[in-house]
Length: 152
Image (cartoon, rainbow, N blue to C red; front, side, top):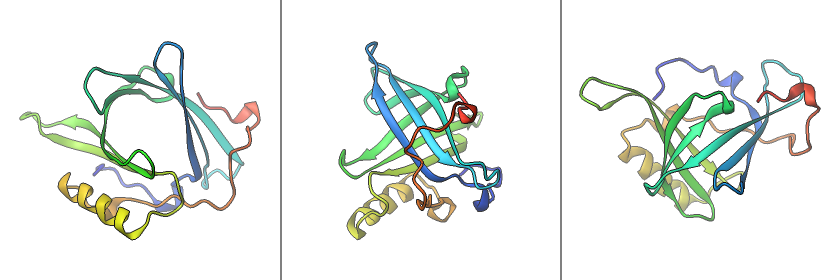
């Protein structure tokens, strides 16, 4: 997984994504969450997802700042969860040196059988499941934040 250390206390809380398909076919990802390190309510930022001709592959323009990454939907049941993977940096032999992965769920918890399936996918990607953090959901950020908190 990502080589940099991420303090679990700094992981956003009450984190949610809202995806909207635009008329041009691209997708706007509006993300809301609470940054526990800064303790100033909900943040909101937008990114753009560009679909490609390759099934499962998308180009993700984080914060719409031109930093575009290749993201892959590795597994999804289209109802409950998806596993998304990104290789940040390649080795000289084109294997992945630095990567990121996420498990997205439509519900706060996955059933035992879905957790087992997700664990299998993570293992097949040669990722360490203990490197993943669960996002806490205690105080919903679904209401629109004030404009001062919009990042992108």
